[in-house]
Length: 68
Length: 244
Image 1 (cartoon, chains in turn blue, yellow):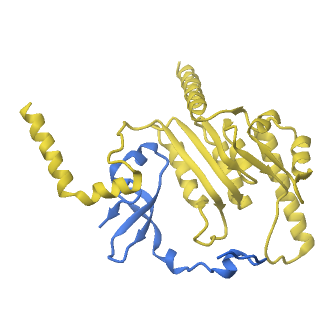
Image 2: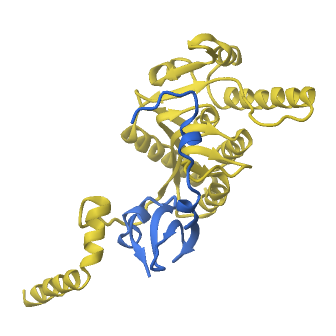
Image 3: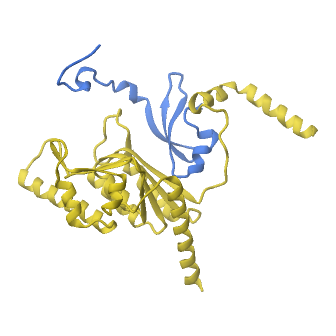
């Protein structure tokens, strides 16, 4: 499908807020991070908010890790 | 030997007993193990996407929230183990006051700070980039310099105009005080016509930013790490002298 219109993309395909509602910023094991809650209630790490470069090499905090 | 073997077996068992974590790691990072290293004395602060300030942006925007960064900057200042800070910038700009707040915080940190502009350091990214002790830009990165703009409902046009004018002066003052660019040159770039098709302003590319005195040097990770270590040593020497 090709659209040729002066409208912005979001006017035609509005973003659903629902998809982002499950995301939140939490502190877990002393590290601040963005997590997304899955349907089964577990949390998946999206982004680690840290200034320590070594935290990003920590196995426990690799992006995509699931916390139960 | 036997101990080694049993350790290996243990590891194998661990890997097998927890296959989901291994699969996850491969899915997310494309590898099964990441290298481990001791604590770092240099911390990294990345400012990516839009600088989010007073207004919460819709969730599909990639943002850096300044309320997250301010406590981290204080923590970096207070922690004696941290000796230097590298700022990674790839931002399209954002809230002026949030950006200025970050810039002032970075500028007033006592520890050596170095910034690298990667990709883009546009609009409010410019004061953040120059706020560090020494700034780098990669050759392909660009910085857009343009007048401050406002969207949305405006109540009291003359007052708002004056407020915006003062805000712009604050940005100009900050940049000219923290870099080698002259005020006239910066204003000239800001109000230049013909560079951004039908808009006023200039898109400054890596080497040009250095030529204008906005950024100190063209370079990437190697140069930045070398510089921050050099500044840390200068800092240590100075502290040593004070004690004697």
